[in-house]
Length: 589
Image (tube, rainbow, N blue to C red):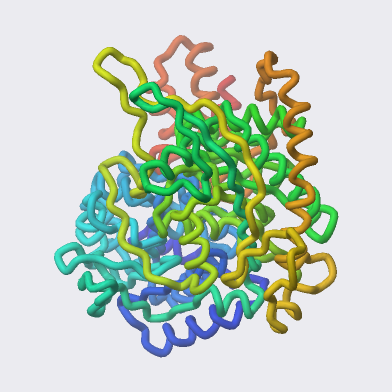
């Protein structure tokens, strides 16, 4: 219990920024009920993290809990949660692994992932019951079936004092696949039956838009003609927007996304043009995200960005050990474009990102809503977001659904072990037994099709009056923000210019562009948990130097260090103990 006393000595503080109306209302509802379980469904970008940490700070101050445990989907989100907690005076350790037993002294809890909890649920159960604990389950739909994460979460946190569940969208499930700690009600969507999650507090996209919490989104669809060779050796050509059968549509879509064609560079040029426009008309640090289907495509798209724009993008891949640092650098830097696969699909906060290019084959409603949510977070009035996407029926249907009602119910993710989302990619490239490809992309061009807004497709051809009601005129017709019709007209007029720009950039096709970064590494220091991580690295370096100088094993130096500066091993020691050990090591050199 000594560690619990030290935890309480660190007093959290409330955010200096006033709470939004929905956050205040949700807090009042929670405090009026003091529930054991509480589910908040708030549209992406609404501020779920701020709400959760404000609640955590209040519970810590009143000593209703003594520890906070945050569970999130990805490693990068651990850092994001820890930084946000630091800003509110709550020290959460994002580097606590399953190999370290106790929660580190000097912290008020830790941030982990669903996968880590599934690795040792009883370890997390011991941590969550040693003292009264608030467990925050971020994007709780990840505790659904297919990953065994739900069972692990229930085993780990079933006896925790309080549990707060967060999600960006309601979700469905089957009666035998319930996510723990969530209440459900009967659902008869499309005659399928089953259950739908029931939130204790809901804040939808329409409410967030009315409150200027999120940006209005304009969907810019690009069509084009794709040509490919099928398994019979026949050359097939089809338009993205008029492909006919589902099979032909899928092949046309796949061909359009091929880096060797013209569709991708054309849309990247249009995206870059839109970023420039936004930077000149109200968002000086506007940036864009490109979502690729896989890492090979991401690398190829990054080279195209470099060739078309003259600037290297931030290339963010899940197996890159620097991925989290790159996301942080992009979020706070000035780079125009980041290319990624799934690293920025859910929860990751990049407020300056206002443009999204959908160059991926993923097409589930859940992934679509979460990805579009990356560009809707508003920082100031009169900001807008633009999503560039192929003019194919599955994506246009998802865009229309979000236009009609963003707060619609999503099915639970059906995932394989080791994956995070059921992304329903396009059919894989099949091969004959002799290794010959069943399908080969030949070429694809791109043409602006329309802008989708308010259920109306604006082509920009000036063929007649545009159907925009008075409310839309008043909301979107403000200075510095184009109406959907004006956006369509601009994109349509710029189409031919962009085509010439792409043709000029292809004259140097023989040149292999290196992805030289235009933005150097930045110093990675900051909050208290970062200080502790850096101190541990520095201690390890100093131990190596002392061992080399004295010809003693590293283990002996570590033992001597603990004798000189008593306390737990460095992996779980507090910042004060680590600083004292660093100074002791310096005297040994």
